[in-house]
Each structure stands twice: as structure tokens, then as C-alpha cells.
Image 1 (cartoon, rainbow, N blue to C red):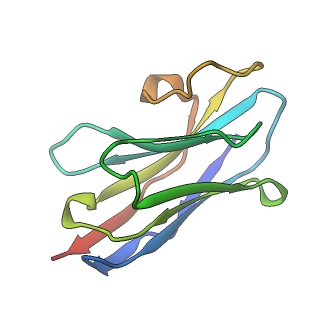
Image 2 (tube, helix red, strand yellow):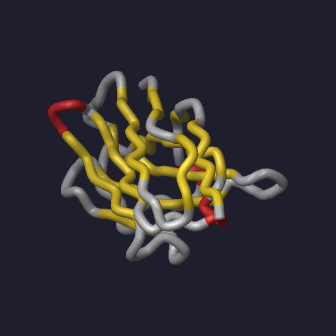
Image 3 (cartoon, rainbow, N blue to C red):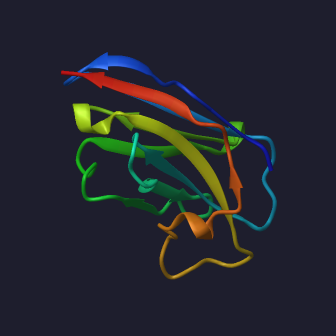
Length: 127
């Protein structure tokens, strides 16, 4: 599985961006796609995730109400709509795929649970 992230850029505080994560393929074990971010000098952190089967979602508390994750099954693409961006949202954003042949009780939120990673896309929010 190859993942291609895009959509980053420079935006003023309060603005919006939409990130895209295109997957080269999906299999019966394709379970979820997650977005993580890493700011300079900080550890990578979970942002949001969505399951391919059922469309269940999970969000970090810091982005709830501002970010929305969605999927387009026909395009094998997951989107992260980011509204009301804040300077603290500045980071490199990565998408990743988690594989599981069966549905899990909880959507994975740790990066160790994700098997494939795309290249990052830079998001910079100016104050």
C-alpha cells in the first residue's frame, strides 16, 4: 500500500485547508487511515482517523470541532478538512494506513498500530 499525502500550505490563523491521502490500493485487511502530525522539536501525535468499513471516526481533543475526516471509497482517498486553524496546528502532517482483517473495538490512535506511511505535507499557520 502506497499513500500519497497532499494539500498542505501556508494559511493565516482562522483559515482552512484540506489535506488528501490517496491510497494506491485497498485490500480486505485495509482497516483505517489516520492522520498524524509532528511539529519541530515535538513527538508525532495522533490527529484523526477513519475506518474504511463503516466510516467510524476518532479525533484528538485538540482538533475536535475544527477538523473533519472523511473518505471517498471510489477514489481510495481520505480527506482531512481543517477549519479555524491555529498557529499551534503548524506541523508536518502524515497519513498512515492500519491493517486488520476484522473490525477493532477501538480505532488505533498510536503510530505503532499503523503499517504504512505516506510522505508528509507541511502545514504552516501564521498568526
